[in-house]
Image (cartoon, rainbow, N blue to C red; front, side, top):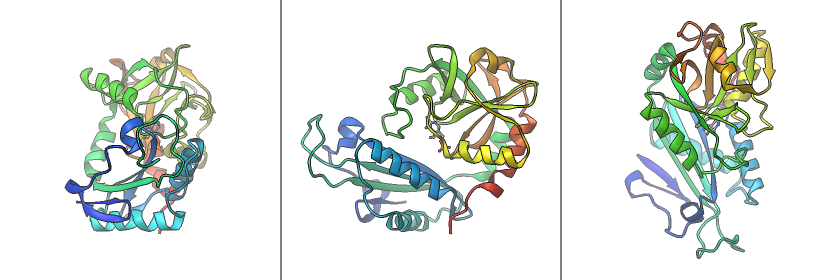
Length: 283
Ligand code: PLP
């Protein structure tokens, strides 16, 4: 495997950054994960736009132009011979003597990796559906920025694993589900309406979430962008999560309780089947 690190393509096992990189010291960095399908980046434009937004919120600049970054992403995908998989990119504020204050003039660190994933395995998982548990949302309130500070997410997903589940749903102090540890959360009401929390409040604006809203419109499915409680989720007829890694992934159990009939729901299956005809396929 090959990784890109600050201008160089290096063997994955030898790739590294400096011990005083602010990404390492302070989680002072942001990232993106983009799906690769049939050798093409999916929704690249939106992912890079969100990257620029995340960087801006932390007063960081793009490490290179959009066009140049696009070339690097493609080169990493090509060098790793990824047809179906993921490309990961991370930008940190760069290397500086350890000090909380932002350094005056640092060069940002850019790392890009790619790996293949099995489409067949993912489809199998989607046919079975996944289990989720709920955990208190103990994250900071800038989860709209896609930072590499993911320790609460790691802990939540570890708790899920210990409970035999794949994902954890964060629940805020008022009992409302915010989002998953690495996905956005959705339910379907008895009336057949898709319900997902507005992106303005306490969640990451998932790219897959945005595209799924478009897919829902295409399928004439009604959507309510509003918060929903854990109890409402227990009573939902279906549930699913969305992320670049999983696509639209049916949820069949929440905290050990079957969702609906305990099988992937119709809306989730339709959204999944239609997703890639709506998502942007980059050249
Ligand atoms: N929410 C969180 C906390 C995430 O980490 C992710 C993806 O990693 C998402 C939502 C889904 O975002 P996207 O659809 O852009 O992958």
